[in-house]
Structures are given as C-alpha cells and as structure tokens.
Image: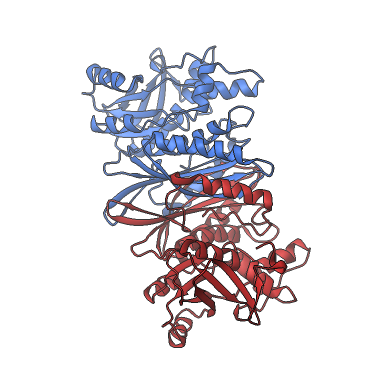
Length: 317
Length: 317
C-alpha cells in the first residue's frame, strides 16, 4: 500500500507525486504501515490495496493471465504479511480491454482466487469494467489481533530477511533488454509467495518491526528506520542473493530491486542460530541475518566493514 | 460492485464478459448484493469496490479533478447505501499519468476524501501508481448490523424510487454529441450523492428489498426481481424524470440510464402518503411510488396500463 515503486521504474517526478499522496495527511489514518490497522466493534482488522496495470507493472508478453492474477493478489496479500495479519478475504476490481475473451478473464480470476486460497482468504466480490489496459486492484482484509508495526525496532536487535533477493528485478531487466530471464528469476516475478505464516511465526518469536520488500531492501529498511527512529545497518556480504541473479550487478539488484515480497524483520538479540534453524526447517525458506539495529537515523550499507551508503556510489538512495 | 455498466455504453460482448465474472461462482461469496456481507469476530461488515477509468467512465474535459474523485468515491459508497450499511472507511487506489502534477493529485484526493467525509467515512489508505489514464478504485467498508438485501421483496409490496432520474445519462449524451449539458444534468453526473441516511431510514420503515440504481432502473429492478423471485411492475407514468432531462427520450433515459445512485426500494403495503411525506421533509428528496411487486418473474413496464416491456419496443431489455 502506498508503495508506487514499479519494476518499470518510477522517476523523480513520480517520487514527488508519491510525496503528495503521503502528505494528504491526517485523513490517511494508519497509513504508516503496509496495511491500515482499524478496529470495528472489537474486531481488529488490517486492510490494504494494490493496483497493477498492464505496461506499468507487467506485460502480457512476459507472464500468463493466471500469473497476472496471482501476482496482483499476492502483492496485496503481502501487505497483510507485512503486519503479521491473517488474511480473511479479498475484493478484486478488474478492467479488461475490448477483445479479451471470457477465457482470458476466467484465467485471470483463477489466478487471483488461487492466490487468495493459498493464503487462507476468500474472494468476496469485485467489480468488472472495460479498460484500455488490463487493470487489477486487489483489496485485502485480514484479522490483526497482534499486528507487528514498522515502528518497534530497538537498538541491539538483529536485522534479518527471508528468502533470496534480486530475482524479480533481474527478470524485468532481462525482458526489457529483449532477453529471456533465467527460469528461477521468471518464477520469482510471476509467482511471488506472500509470507503469511512466516510473519506470524516471526511475530511469535519476538519480531519487533516488520515490513515486506516491495520498494527494495534499502528502500524498505529506510521505512523501518524512519518509523522506529533508529539506524539499520546492512552488511552487503550477508545479503542473500538469488542464484538466478548473476553478474557484477547481482548484489545491487538484491539491495535495490523491488517487488520481492519477502520480509525484512528486526528480532531481539536473543534470536539466534537455533531459532533460525527451526524457521528454515519449518518453512523451507532461508532466513538470513544481514545486519543490526543501532541508535541513529536512516540506513547504512557496509561493504567489508566500510560505509558505502550513504555515499557518492549510492547517491540515488 | 460487479456493475460494469458505463455511461459510455457496454456492448453485447462486454455483457458476456460480465456473465463470466459473475459465474466465477462459489468463490464470489456474498456477491448477490451490491456489497459483500461478512462477519468477522462478531462485527458485521459490508464491503464493495468500484473501479473508474478515464475515457470509460468519465472524461477530464467533462468534470474537474475534484469531481472525478468525488464521483468515484460516491459510486462506491452508494453500494453501502444499497444494503443500508453505515460507512466506516475507504481505501483509494489511484493511477495517474506522467505529467500530472501534485496539484491535480491533491484535488483528486480531496474529492475522494470529501465524499468519504460526507458519508461519515474515513480515508484509511490507498495505493498510488503510474497509469496511462487516470484510474481510481475505491473500496468501501461499512457496518451492516441490519442489512437490507435484494432478495426480500414480497408480492403486494409497493415499488418506490428516491430522487429524479435520467440526468446523468442526459449529461453524457450531451457531452458525446458535442453539446454542453444542462447544469442540473451535469451536477447529477459530477456530484452524485450516496443515499446513506435515506437507506437507513427506509430500512427502519420496513424496506423489504433495496438496490442502488447503477445499472439503470429497469436493469436494477431486474436484479431485485431475480433475487426475490417476484415480478416488479413499473408504471411508466409514475417514473420521476429529472427536470434537466427533456425531449422525446426523457422517460427512456429515466428508465434505462445508469449511474443514478438513487435507491430502488420495495416497501410493505402499509407504507403510505404520511410516511412518504415524512421522508421527503426529512431528506428534501423525492420518494415516488412507481409500481408494485407481484407474484411472477422479471420486470414488466406498463404505459397507460398496457405492457410495453418485455415487448418488441424494448427488445434490448
């Protein structure tokens, strides 16, 4: 939610628009986290929406109709994982161009429904209109009895990340350069998995702050640092790079590539190797300590113990 | 929700797509009404979403940025009125083209927020992305302790409608013909008012079935007839036509024009002139009896007591 980053590249102008959107201020209650957190008649809920548009967030030559639907719904569900909420249901607003047939729509909706079901959610309803491009807005609603916010990171906590990074951006870069992405990179772009159960486990094991990687590791670390009023120190060597991401830019893609839908989490100092091992066995998913929370402000990226960002080499941070 | 009708005219092909969308079946729980009705931890909620796209649902040469935002949010809120729910909050997913500046976005969001506030709802959050056309999906959440469904109409009930009809369609027809619409017609298109308080009052006065007029009077009467397994008889002479709608086609526009966001309601036979008078005084809004509910199926349109639809003159019903 309110993460307008697209793999096709937001520019400076669009960043200014996003600032306006955020600034709209007190009306946007609860907007400090990935999902809005509200209480209705004693029920604690998390809500979020995620808008995906053909040509901006995906191209139909890249992925199938089912994958378009899956990806749009998984992206929205990931906002619930980001606050450790339990998905309940989704609404899908869909726009399709003239000439798209019923089979296309059925496959698209099947992808949305399968992603929802995989996370324990029900497709409650939606809207269908004509649109010049395939357009999908998925709204998700979850139960958030014990949400984890962005704001709880404490100096001394460890900084951890789930999964292996950089692959979605590597896939987009390949497509945009006219190449075929590595199968592993394509799969990460087409079929992201919201880390719902993982988020609940991390909460139950002391997670102090949580966010999903939709804006990229450094960008999302910045959101946590700002909300928690701490500095997040990232050690480049520790960042887990997806094996499908190769070449000189691999670590940069893992640091800056967005739409990963993995979790960045701060955990108390007592969370150690045995806990990590339990997580990895339970979810068959890497969990990697990539740094530390300290007193201060912002994000520091270290390489070989030396500060490389903020710095001239990362001026776009 | 699931009302894909646009003032720019859905065709037969698109109607088939809508049928596919509806047929997606058991996964679309609660989709028989304008809003999905769910219960979470004892809280009874209504949820709906409404997707509006530049060039399909509005043109920026027709209405201002504030009006685009207001209209999109009011359309979604009208789905809550359609089940007599009390609005709580909204999420706004917005797409804007490159080149739109911060002021445009501020005005658009201001229109959304003002519509929400006018209905007692809060802007909880949203999403902002780049899009080739201005794109707005508003998701609304309301409390629905005593919802009124489409399915409760009983033979013998009266068939009533709020407001004066035909103006939004007359405005679109004027714009499309290169004319300037009558001010009253333009206002009805640009600034629809969701009938939230009116719906609650009608529920408290015995409403047996309720729907908002997003697909047009005859189309929405058909939805109520199907859900309630009755026939809705509409007497053409009684249909309240907006004074800005003139010419030979005025009654046809009032019968078939969509996106009115007025309420069609069935009320028990005991609901009479005194009740009507109380409503009109309280809300400064017409409430007109336009027909009757009877045993049977579908919608019958009468003129001078003679059946004109279904019939050759209304073959597109």
